Image 1 (tube, rainbow, N blue to C red):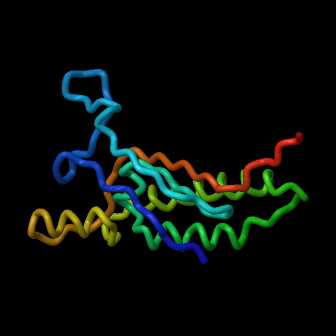
Image 2: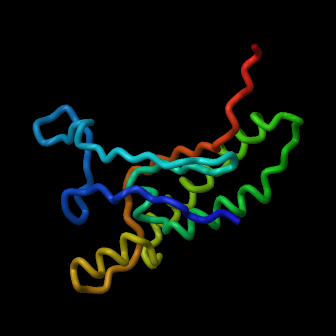
Length: 147
């Protein structure tokens, strides 16, 4: 069972206006980004995503989907590296797909709908249509160096 152990800060100038890298005058610069370090152990799953992912899926949704995907991604080879790659790839596809489904669902209870309800002091339901980017990586032991 996977669970969220660490989460970076939500980066936006104000509600509904996230940081956006860009070349135009109002674009945010790379040096505006939040920098964070976290210790990883072999088997940890790192999920990087755009607001299109995190506005439409909660941390609990993401952990549950990774747990289910890990349970159904069989190791069909003897290679841990090949299995890790297949699992990371499957998790990214599943997360992006579920985020998209939530984004177009007008009745979904999403992190964005809960935040919009609070921010606008009115009931808001449904997902938030947006670009959705997901990268998933699995931490592994470093390869042993031959001496």
